[in-house]
Image (cartoon, rainbow, N blue to C red; front, side, top):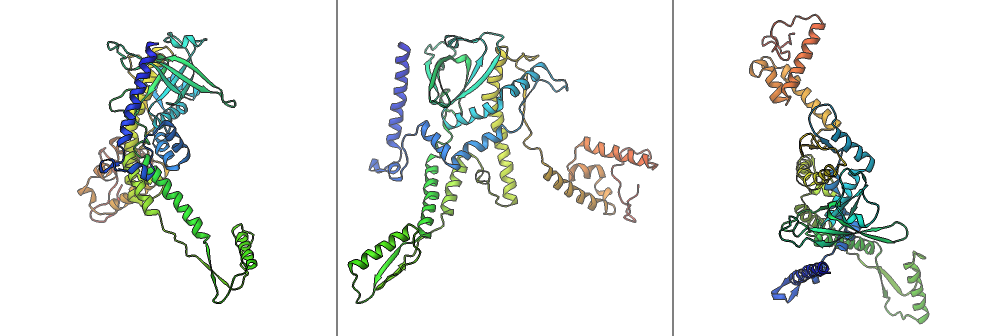
Length: 466
């Protein structure tokens, strides 16, 4: 009972703080102008607002989905050592990922966390058969049967640690998880101990429980985008189907029967039953539509959203803006995703989850305590198209080098391969070895100089000698 009172006081404190904040948002001229209300912005946002925006608006969904999908793209493996032999920990992790679709669940967890203030990953362990056992810490040597993710609205913090001398002071102790069964709308609730969940918070300055929703700082811009894109569509719709103005001819008097006939024709025209007007004494003139291009206004909103979220505008909208811009945006985007992997996905999501599984015996312990790495798919690995383009450029550079008499006296062949073609020392050594082997097979005397490098033209003739 005492704990419930403490929790209610905490909730009330949060509500009061929000109310005070919402009371000053958009206030101007000493409160005489309420800018937020005038522009149609909500003063207080809830999880429901963020969820609806994510569910219905394309740009809002892109803000959440694109960085998360890029972060978790490819396989995610544990690397205990650099040896070729697979360790028990590495194999067990791969098996769990395949059996329980771990990566798919972690992607969902990441998205729910970014939409709200936090997300929760519940571990369904084999040591429980009743709801009461969920209120106890897990036993050692258990099996992971499943994992399930919960959003802020589905994972209520029921009890906080109030002992200031406890290492978990201020942290959740008990959660109430709400699971809605498909089909019948029935919601099942059950309480769980904090040791059975992973609490994920993103972008928190001074609070370990509640983070900042990703859409919060750009929510007004998203509302403006809805106005611009929806308004432009409505403007075009009305402009493409203009209204008509009737002008009575001089000296003509409109009788009641003529008026009824005209109204009937207008009604049929409006409902696509008629495409022409037949009347006398009245000139029907099309009203000039007023349609303007909203692209510049939309672009400003996209720029503001891009600046806040760190997502390049080209990535956010999926449009190409020239080769140079595209290359710069791609490099910046890869750096952003790499940083997100290292500082958030690995440290906040993956390692706490893996460490719990090791602690509970679901995964075997590494040879050295907590000494393992996370191996991601290389973001900077080039594709087939880029590889072919690089090969073409290098081939042209090599042809130009080999055709210039005396070039090897200015830049030695191995130096050209390293500094101009960007090859590594191992790659250069492999090239020289393959060249020597080929020459030996053809019966060419390669001499005693093993550092000969690539064949070069003589300065007198410009002809390549082998």
